[in-house]
Image (cartoon, rainbow, N blue to C red; front, top):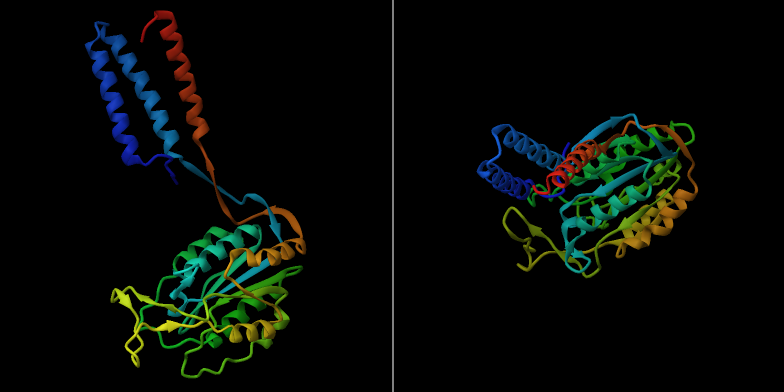
Length: 319
Protein backbone atom coordinates (compact mmCIF):
# COMPACT_ATOMS: atom_id res chain seq x y z
CA UNK A 1 0.00 0.00 0.00
CA UNK A 2 1.28 3.47 -0.88
CA UNK A 3 0.13 6.90 0.24
CA UNK A 4 2.28 9.57 -1.48
CA UNK A 5 2.99 12.76 0.49
CA UNK A 6 3.36 14.81 -2.70
CA UNK A 7 1.35 13.59 -5.74
CA UNK A 8 3.40 11.51 -8.17
CA UNK A 9 2.32 13.72 -11.09
CA UNK A 10 4.29 16.50 -9.39
CA UNK A 11 7.21 14.53 -7.98
CA UNK A 12 8.18 12.53 -11.08
CA UNK A 13 8.58 15.51 -13.48
CA UNK A 14 10.52 17.50 -10.85
CA UNK A 15 12.90 14.60 -10.20
CA UNK A 16 13.43 14.00 -13.90
CA UNK A 17 14.32 17.67 -14.35
CA UNK A 18 16.78 17.53 -11.44
CA UNK A 19 18.32 14.31 -12.75
CA UNK A 20 18.55 15.64 -16.30
CA UNK A 21 20.20 18.88 -15.18
CA UNK A 22 22.69 17.07 -12.97
CA UNK A 23 23.61 14.50 -15.66
CA UNK A 24 24.06 17.30 -18.21
CA UNK A 25 26.43 19.12 -15.83
CA UNK A 26 28.41 15.96 -15.10
CA UNK A 27 28.77 15.03 -18.77
CA UNK A 28 30.09 18.50 -19.59
CA UNK A 29 32.69 18.19 -16.82
CA UNK A 30 36.21 17.16 -17.86
CA UNK A 31 36.49 14.38 -15.27
CA UNK A 32 37.26 10.87 -16.47
CA UNK A 33 34.39 8.54 -17.33
CA UNK A 34 34.67 6.50 -14.10
CA UNK A 35 34.15 9.59 -11.88
CA UNK A 36 31.22 10.68 -14.03
CA UNK A 37 29.56 7.28 -13.59
CA UNK A 38 30.08 7.45 -9.80
CA UNK A 39 28.55 10.93 -9.62
CA UNK A 40 25.50 9.90 -11.65
CA UNK A 41 25.13 6.71 -9.58
CA UNK A 42 25.16 8.73 -6.33
CA UNK A 43 22.50 11.18 -7.51
CA UNK A 44 20.39 8.26 -8.74
CA UNK A 45 20.54 6.67 -5.29
CA UNK A 46 19.67 9.99 -3.56
CA UNK A 47 16.70 10.68 -5.86
CA UNK A 48 15.48 7.09 -5.58
CA UNK A 49 15.50 7.29 -1.78
CA UNK A 50 13.66 10.64 -1.86
CA UNK A 51 11.11 9.12 -4.25
CA UNK A 52 10.56 6.08 -2.01
CA UNK A 53 10.22 8.20 1.12
CA UNK A 54 7.64 10.38 -0.62
CA UNK A 55 5.83 7.26 -1.84
CA UNK A 56 5.08 6.28 1.79
CA UNK A 57 5.15 2.54 1.27
CA UNK A 58 3.04 1.01 4.05
CA UNK A 59 3.77 -2.48 5.29
CA UNK A 60 0.94 -4.69 6.59
CA UNK A 61 0.89 -6.10 10.10
CA UNK A 62 -1.53 -8.82 11.10
CA UNK A 63 -2.82 -9.90 14.51
CA UNK A 64 -1.58 -6.76 16.20
CA UNK A 65 -1.86 -6.48 19.98
CA UNK A 66 -4.30 -3.65 20.65
CA UNK A 67 -6.46 -2.37 23.49
CA UNK A 68 -9.93 -3.82 22.94
CA UNK A 69 -13.17 -2.70 24.57
CA UNK A 70 -15.85 -5.16 25.63
CA UNK A 71 -18.36 -3.31 23.43
CA UNK A 72 -20.35 -4.37 20.39
CA UNK A 73 -21.63 -1.32 18.48
CA UNK A 74 -24.43 -1.87 15.97
CA UNK A 75 -25.16 0.90 13.46
CA UNK A 76 -28.61 0.71 11.87
CA UNK A 77 -28.81 3.29 9.09
CA UNK A 78 -31.85 4.43 7.15
CA UNK A 79 -30.67 4.74 3.52
CA UNK A 80 -33.99 5.65 1.92
CA UNK A 81 -33.92 8.56 -0.52
CA UNK A 82 -35.24 10.97 2.13
CA UNK A 83 -31.89 10.65 3.95
CA UNK A 84 -30.40 12.66 1.09
CA UNK A 85 -32.80 15.56 1.69
CA UNK A 86 -30.79 18.77 1.79
CA UNK A 87 -31.58 20.22 5.20
CA UNK A 88 -28.60 19.22 7.32
CA UNK A 89 -26.14 21.95 8.34
CA UNK A 90 -28.04 24.38 6.16
CA UNK A 91 -28.48 22.71 2.78
CA UNK A 92 -26.28 19.62 3.02
CA UNK A 93 -27.68 16.10 2.47
CA UNK A 94 -28.57 14.38 5.73
CA UNK A 95 -26.47 11.36 4.80
CA UNK A 96 -23.29 13.45 4.66
CA UNK A 97 -23.75 14.33 8.32
CA UNK A 98 -24.61 10.70 9.14
CA UNK A 99 -21.39 9.38 7.62
CA UNK A 100 -19.26 11.96 9.44
CA UNK A 101 -20.97 11.31 12.76
CA UNK A 102 -20.65 7.53 12.45
CA UNK A 103 -16.95 7.88 11.64
CA UNK A 104 -16.56 10.04 14.75
CA UNK A 105 -18.40 7.47 16.88
CA UNK A 106 -16.12 4.71 15.59
CA UNK A 107 -13.03 6.77 16.36
CA UNK A 108 -14.31 7.61 19.83
CA UNK A 109 -15.13 3.96 20.60
CA UNK A 110 -12.09 2.51 18.84
CA UNK A 111 -11.22 -0.96 20.11
CA UNK A 112 -14.89 -1.99 20.03
CA UNK A 113 -16.52 -4.43 17.64
CA UNK A 114 -18.66 -2.73 15.00
CA UNK A 115 -21.48 -3.89 12.77
CA UNK A 116 -23.54 -2.10 10.11
CA UNK A 117 -27.06 -2.68 8.81
CA UNK A 118 -28.65 -0.46 6.18
CA UNK A 119 -32.32 -0.41 5.21
CA UNK A 120 -34.58 1.10 2.57
CA UNK A 121 -37.09 -1.14 0.73
CA UNK A 122 -35.28 -4.03 2.38
CA UNK A 123 -32.67 -4.59 5.03
CA UNK A 124 -29.07 -5.61 4.40
CA UNK A 125 -26.25 -6.52 6.81
CA UNK A 126 -23.27 -4.73 5.28
CA UNK A 127 -20.84 -5.77 8.03
CA UNK A 128 -21.26 -8.31 10.85
CA UNK A 129 -19.52 -7.54 14.14
CA UNK A 130 -15.80 -7.14 13.59
CA UNK A 131 -12.77 -5.53 15.25
CA UNK A 132 -11.63 -4.34 11.82
CA UNK A 133 -13.05 -0.82 11.81
CA UNK A 134 -11.66 -0.20 8.31
CA UNK A 135 -13.88 -2.95 7.00
CA UNK A 136 -16.90 -1.19 8.51
CA UNK A 137 -15.74 2.19 7.18
CA UNK A 138 -15.50 0.62 3.73
CA UNK A 139 -19.04 -0.70 4.17
CA UNK A 140 -20.24 2.81 5.01
CA UNK A 141 -18.52 4.04 1.83
CA UNK A 142 -20.73 1.74 -0.28
CA UNK A 143 -23.88 3.61 0.77
CA UNK A 144 -25.14 5.58 -2.22
CA UNK A 145 -28.21 7.57 -3.18
CA UNK A 146 -30.96 5.13 -4.24
CA UNK A 147 -32.70 5.50 -7.56
CA UNK A 148 -35.97 7.41 -7.18
CA UNK A 149 -37.77 4.64 -9.08
CA UNK A 150 -36.37 2.03 -6.69
CA UNK A 151 -37.83 3.84 -3.68
CA UNK A 152 -41.14 2.33 -2.61
CA UNK A 153 -41.75 4.10 0.66
CA UNK A 154 -40.10 4.14 4.05
CA UNK A 155 -40.69 2.01 7.13
CA UNK A 156 -38.27 0.77 9.80
CA UNK A 157 -40.17 -2.53 9.98
CA UNK A 158 -37.93 -4.11 7.33
CA UNK A 159 -34.83 -3.95 9.55
CA UNK A 160 -36.29 -5.66 12.64
CA UNK A 161 -35.23 -9.23 11.82
CA UNK A 162 -31.66 -8.33 10.87
CA UNK A 163 -31.33 -6.27 14.04
CA UNK A 164 -32.56 -9.23 16.05
CA UNK A 165 -29.99 -11.49 14.41
CA UNK A 166 -27.05 -9.17 15.11
CA UNK A 167 -28.16 -8.36 18.66
CA UNK A 168 -28.70 -12.03 19.49
CA UNK A 169 -25.19 -12.88 18.26
CA UNK A 170 -23.79 -10.17 20.53
CA UNK A 171 -25.80 -11.29 23.54
CA UNK A 172 -24.29 -14.78 23.31
CA UNK A 173 -20.81 -13.42 23.97
CA UNK A 174 -19.55 -13.37 27.53
CA UNK A 175 -19.09 -10.00 29.23
CA UNK A 176 -20.14 -7.86 26.24
CA UNK A 177 -21.96 -4.53 26.25
CA UNK A 178 -24.26 -4.16 23.25
CA UNK A 179 -24.77 -0.61 21.95
CA UNK A 180 -27.20 0.39 19.18
CA UNK A 181 -27.17 3.58 17.12
CA UNK A 182 -30.40 3.65 15.10
CA UNK A 183 -30.10 6.42 12.52
CA UNK A 184 -33.05 7.84 10.59
CA UNK A 185 -35.18 10.88 9.82
CA UNK A 186 -38.26 9.03 11.09
CA UNK A 187 -40.22 9.57 7.89
CA UNK A 188 -42.70 6.74 7.24
CA UNK A 189 -44.17 6.68 3.74
CA UNK A 190 -44.73 3.00 3.03
CA UNK A 191 -48.22 1.84 2.06
CA UNK A 192 -48.37 -0.10 5.31
CA UNK A 193 -47.40 2.89 7.45
CA UNK A 194 -48.02 1.19 10.79
CA UNK A 195 -44.62 0.92 12.50
CA UNK A 196 -44.24 -2.30 14.42
CA UNK A 197 -43.04 -2.29 18.01
CA UNK A 198 -39.30 -2.74 18.58
CA UNK A 199 -39.82 -3.53 22.27
CA UNK A 200 -38.92 -7.16 21.60
CA UNK A 201 -35.30 -6.09 21.08
CA UNK A 202 -35.01 -4.12 24.33
CA UNK A 203 -33.67 -7.08 26.34
CA UNK A 204 -30.77 -7.49 23.88
CA UNK A 205 -29.62 -3.86 24.08
CA UNK A 206 -27.50 -2.34 26.87
CA UNK A 207 -27.40 1.23 25.60
CA UNK A 208 -27.13 3.58 22.67
CA UNK A 209 -29.46 6.02 21.00
CA UNK A 210 -31.82 6.73 18.17
CA UNK A 211 -30.15 9.55 16.25
CA UNK A 212 -32.50 11.88 14.40
CA UNK A 213 -31.59 13.80 11.25
CA UNK A 214 -33.45 16.40 9.23
CA UNK A 215 -35.76 19.30 10.04
CA UNK A 216 -39.47 19.95 10.52
CA UNK A 217 -39.25 22.47 7.67
CA UNK A 218 -38.05 19.69 5.37
CA UNK A 219 -35.48 19.42 2.63
CA UNK A 220 -35.45 18.93 -1.13
CA UNK A 221 -34.11 15.69 -2.60
CA UNK A 222 -31.83 15.79 -5.63
CA UNK A 223 -32.17 12.93 -8.09
CA UNK A 224 -28.79 12.21 -9.66
CA UNK A 225 -30.39 10.11 -12.38
CA UNK A 226 -32.49 12.94 -13.82
CA UNK A 227 -30.16 15.71 -12.60
CA UNK A 228 -33.03 17.59 -10.99
CA UNK A 229 -34.92 17.78 -7.73
CA UNK A 230 -37.73 15.33 -7.11
CA UNK A 231 -41.13 16.98 -7.54
CA UNK A 232 -44.42 16.39 -5.76
CA UNK A 233 -46.79 14.95 -8.43
CA UNK A 234 -49.79 16.63 -6.79
CA UNK A 235 -48.37 20.16 -6.68
CA UNK A 236 -45.62 20.05 -9.31
CA UNK A 237 -43.32 21.75 -6.81
CA UNK A 238 -40.14 20.37 -5.22
CA UNK A 239 -41.02 17.50 -2.91
CA UNK A 240 -39.94 17.96 0.71
CA UNK A 241 -38.90 15.28 3.16
CA UNK A 242 -40.09 16.19 6.65
CA UNK A 243 -38.37 14.77 9.71
CA UNK A 244 -40.71 12.83 12.04
CA UNK A 245 -39.25 12.77 15.53
CA UNK A 246 -42.43 11.20 16.97
CA UNK A 247 -41.58 7.91 15.27
CA UNK A 248 -37.97 8.18 16.39
CA UNK A 249 -38.89 8.90 20.01
CA UNK A 250 -41.27 5.93 20.02
CA UNK A 251 -38.53 3.64 18.70
CA UNK A 252 -36.13 4.93 21.37
CA UNK A 253 -38.69 4.33 24.12
CA UNK A 254 -39.42 0.80 22.89
CA UNK A 255 -35.73 -0.13 22.81
CA UNK A 256 -35.13 1.72 26.11
CA UNK A 257 -32.37 3.88 24.67
CA UNK A 258 -32.05 7.64 24.28
CA UNK A 259 -33.29 9.84 21.49
CA UNK A 260 -30.78 12.46 20.30
CA UNK A 261 -31.51 15.06 17.67
CA UNK A 262 -28.30 15.43 15.66
CA UNK A 263 -28.39 19.06 14.61
CA UNK A 264 -24.94 19.28 16.21
CA UNK A 265 -22.33 16.45 16.22
CA UNK A 266 -21.46 17.37 19.81
CA UNK A 267 -24.92 16.23 20.96
CA UNK A 268 -23.73 12.64 21.17
CA UNK A 269 -20.52 13.32 23.12
CA UNK A 270 -21.99 12.82 26.61
CA UNK A 271 -23.34 9.42 25.57
CA UNK A 272 -20.00 8.34 24.09
CA UNK A 273 -18.24 9.39 27.31
CA UNK A 274 -20.75 7.37 29.31
CA UNK A 275 -20.28 4.30 27.12
CA UNK A 276 -16.49 4.51 27.39
CA UNK A 277 -16.53 5.00 31.16
CA UNK A 278 -18.67 1.88 31.56
CA UNK A 279 -16.49 -0.33 29.38
CA UNK A 280 -13.52 -2.48 30.28
CA UNK A 281 -10.27 -2.74 28.34
CA UNK A 282 -7.95 -5.63 27.64
CA UNK A 283 -4.78 -6.08 25.61
CA UNK A 284 -5.43 -8.75 23.03
CA UNK A 285 -4.55 -9.90 19.55
CA UNK A 286 -6.86 -8.15 17.13
CA UNK A 287 -7.97 -9.36 13.71
CA UNK A 288 -7.28 -5.86 12.44
CA UNK A 289 -4.77 -5.29 9.68
CA UNK A 290 -2.58 -2.31 10.53
CA UNK A 291 -0.26 -0.40 8.23
CA UNK A 292 3.18 0.88 9.22
CA UNK A 293 5.41 3.41 7.51
CA UNK A 294 8.63 1.99 6.07
CA UNK A 295 10.20 5.34 5.18
CA UNK A 296 12.88 5.06 7.87
CA UNK A 297 14.60 2.27 5.92
CA UNK A 298 15.11 4.62 2.98
CA UNK A 299 15.79 7.65 5.19
CA UNK A 300 18.86 5.90 6.63
CA UNK A 301 20.29 5.23 3.16
CA UNK A 302 19.50 8.81 2.08
CA UNK A 303 21.23 10.25 5.14
CA UNK A 304 24.32 8.11 4.52
CA UNK A 305 24.62 9.29 0.92
CA UNK A 306 24.04 12.93 1.86
CA UNK A 307 26.85 12.68 4.44
CA UNK A 308 29.04 11.09 1.78
CA UNK A 309 28.32 13.97 -0.60
CA UNK A 310 29.18 16.51 2.11
CA UNK A 311 32.50 14.76 2.80
CA UNK A 312 33.35 14.71 -0.90
CA UNK A 313 32.46 18.42 -1.27
CA UNK A 314 34.55 19.38 1.76
CA UNK A 315 37.55 17.36 0.60
CA UNK A 316 37.41 18.65 -2.97
CA UNK A 317 36.14 22.10 -2.18
CA UNK A 318 33.55 21.85 -4.95
CA UNK A 319 30.62 19.76 -6.21
